[in-house]
Length: 85
Image (tube, rainbow, N blue to C red; front, side, top):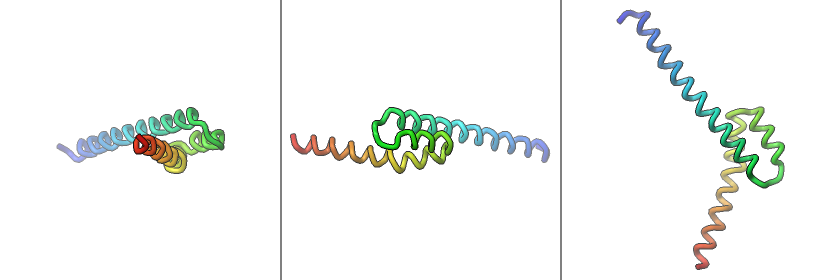
């Protein structure tokens, strides 16, 4: 294998990984945007704007600031229901 073929192979692998990462970040952003639209909470419009403009970084901020906190609240309420039985 020549140097040129090796560089072409390396570029192909790098391009494939970049495409996979790009599609994954787009899917995560769309998932968080849909989650934000479906939830009922204050500042919904602000979070939609943050996710839409911020892209994957905005979606990550939303995940840790809102979704994770709300998931914790729903788990606590289901734990209380289970323990009261």
